[in-house]
Image 1: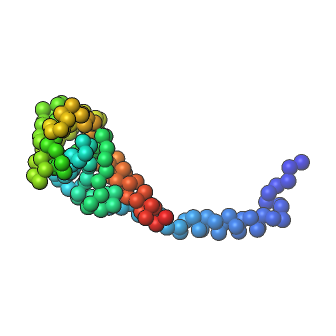
Image 2 (image 1 turned 120 degrees about the horizontal axis):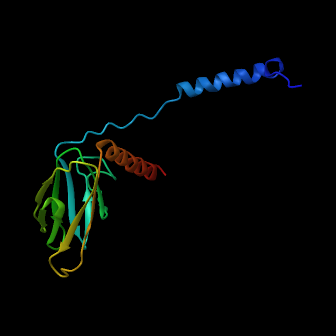
Image 3 (image 1 turned 180 degrees about the horizontal axis):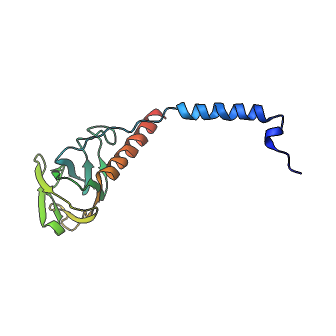
Length: 169
């Protein structure tokens, strides 16, 4: 014959523990979501260096501050606003082309060139990059990963959290 939990002598002890645990969970602090505003137009610095692209988001505290850059072929961007690519070079003359939008610009050492784009929907856009000096057949191709603003901000928060964890550890 099963014994009822309510008639068991240990009931008051575990009931009290359960209530205390629930109280702790109810008042435990929940980490606040970082408030990141995306400016319009959203700037993305793309710098050619060593036949690779370095990408920075100068308006965000992403990946360590204003001097941090990441080398990558897939470039995440928010898709619900005008994007302004600021093209630079540290060594050679490069070109960057987004064929689907018939956009093409040059990157030259000590100069800045700008290209704007207004992607309409999430998805991907292929880009074609190429150094014009020293080895014109070293492609620097990749994709723009167009995301919703919320997904892009989530990606930024994850990168900032990883950076904070690395700095603390």
